[in-house]
Length: 252
Image 1 (spheres, rainbow, N blue to C red):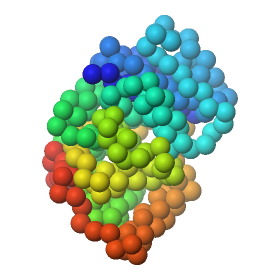
Image 2 (cartoon, helix red, strand yellow; image 1 turned 120 degrees about the horizontal axis):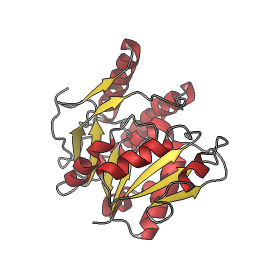
Image 3 (cartoon, rainbow, N blue to C red; image 1 turned 90 degrees about the vertical axis):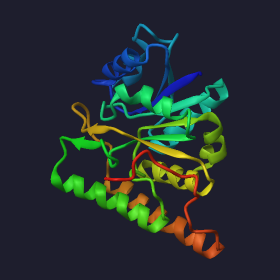
Image 4 (cartoon, helix red, strand yellow; image 1 turned 60 degrees about the vertical axis):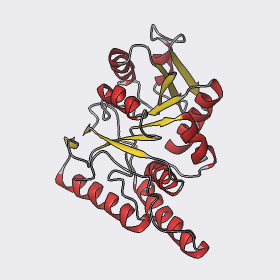
């Protein structure tokens, strides 16, 4: 195997070194690619100062901030061009537990896509207010209802893909950013018959830095989900989720 972890960043200088060290601690042979949107706080410089740069840690600097989906598309293109056969995506703030990376990678032995899920048995969240928990639950319920998905955590950003799955998904041609980027890949995987395994994780809110969540990101997700479903209805595509879609545990 030739796995790589892709981490998009914007103003994550305070925490990126810790994230890199934690990933290498649990997966010492894995490569990492930081996709930085020219962070003014010097995130890129912190990455380049790491002792494993550029042998094992790599930096892709983009000219300006252009959204999460755009950053991941750039990172996926870089990894696919380099020949990586397993691509993991995760946040830069330790909200996604690096210790679960080996389990996500192992899940790809039986699936095309693995999702670090908060909403299957054994998963959960930490440091969240009741309001945020309700919003997240409602958002995932909305996605499942409108698109007919069985994946419990369609908005999750902690994922692993087989190389051929990313190519099948056509992820480089997607247009979404924010949460909708994660939803779009979940939806495409289901419609294309790719297998998905949900690995339970505990999502912990960031301890340093500032959240990138905004009303515009939420609005994009809501509207795009409706647009995708409406397009399916008008084009008379099958609405049933592919039978190959599955999760390790569909219970909340």
